[in-house]
Image 1 (cartoon, rainbow, N blue to C red):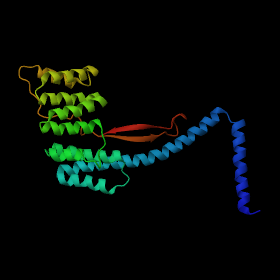
Image 2: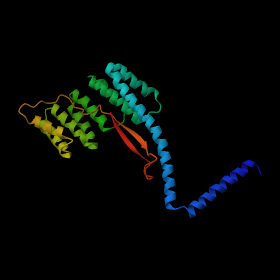
Image 3: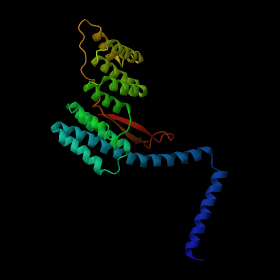
Image 4: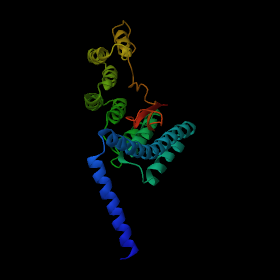
Length: 247
């Protein structure tokens, strides 16, 4: 019999004996420990690859803002180059980068260009943030109805966007509806949404100072997700955890 066949028979025998041992003699603890060790190893491999992409995303975002601050076209061109040449980007990644570019266009008063960006079918991925961005553009163009329709979609998915609805109602001088949105959001969390109560007080004053555009609170704050494998001295039941980094 050829040597290769002997090797295959030997391997099959080892596998069969191992299976018999585990089935008849292995304790649940042994099986669980084995499973957890394999899970830790797999999580570690996944975390390394995931974190590399997350770090790259963080560096690219920071570089984009730095370039856009120097010159708008410089930053936009940087984003477009990534979108065109990085074939590892997911649909969500592409949409996120495209939205960042649109937001900077909006902040620089290029409303129509920003709206074109948000509506680009190549990178379109519906989200509350995208709806709010589009609403900001339409409200700037005086189309408050479309802005409110978009913010109804956004606030249905995330009630924090009721703040933006209140802003648009202010812009259209519909103060009772604005106060209603602020009040409903404030009652969700009277500490976190305290700024809504401040708007209500302003609108109820003798000389209210009405907003002229949507206030996108903390929009420039980026939250990056990283995976952290379990350390050797941690519990055997731990395979790792998710870590958030705010910039």
